[in-house]
Image 1 (cartoon, rainbow, N blue to C red):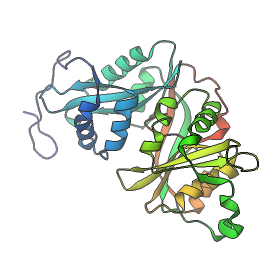
Image 2: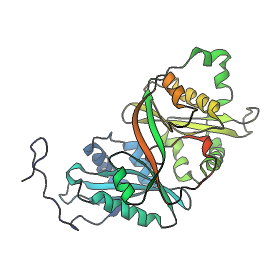
Image 3: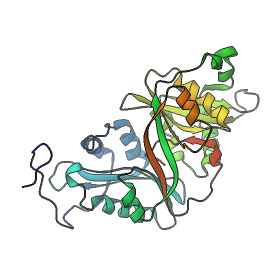
Image 4: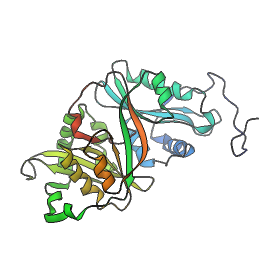
Length: 308
C-alpha cells in the first residue's frame, strides 16, 4: 500500500477513466472549493471562491473516495472572444494522474475555438500549459510588504489631489475606463467589485470636479493571508498609478501586494523603495491570439492572478 510522506495510507490510484465526469460547480460547492485550496497549502480564499462561483464558470471533479473535490478550475469570460483561467487545483492525493489536463481540456472546449484564454502560470503548471498550446506573453512578479509612504508625497497634499473614494454613481465610468484600457468587457466581475473590495478609489479627470468623469481607478481587497491586494489598477500614466496605489496602500493595516510586470519601468522600482519585496514569480500565458487590445499601457495590475 502506498503512503504519503507522513506514513498515512494513500487512497487507491484511480484507473484511467475512473474519475467522475467534470461537472459545473455552484455556490453550494463553496465549502468543497475552500477545502481544495487548503489541501494544496493555499489560503482558503473563501471570499474569492464566492465571487468566482457567482460570476464565473467553475468546473470540478468529485473525489472518487467521496472526500470533496479531486480538482477544480475556473473560466471567467471577458465579453466575446477573451477569457481567463484561474484556481487550477488538483487535490494532492490525485496529482500526477492526468486530472489537471482533463480539467484544462474541458475548460478549453467550453471556452470555444474562437476564444483567447489567458492565465498566470507557476513553474509547476507551465509544462502542462505549454503542452496544451499556451505560450508565454509576459512576466509577473508579486511584490509584498508594509508600504512606506514618503513625507514628500504628503507635502501640500499634492499626491491625493483629484483622488477620492468611489461611490455607486461611479460604476458606469469605472466600467467604461476599464473597457477602454483592457479592450474587453470585465463587467461580470467589476460590477461585483463594490461588494468584494474593501475600498475603491478613482482619479477624477480634467479639473477634478465631481461628475466630469474619471481618468483611472484602483481597488483594494483583503486576501485570506492578512494581505491587502491592490487590483485592478487602471491609470493614464505611471505617476497617476503611483498616486492611486499610495491612496490605498498608505492607510492599509496589513502588508500590501502588487502584481506587476517587472519589465515595465513605472512601478517595480518604486514599490521596492517603499518596502515591497518580490516574493513570487509567474508567467502570463495565452492560448490563442492575445492580440493588441485596448490601451495596455494603462493597465498596471490585474484584478487577481486568478483573473488574468
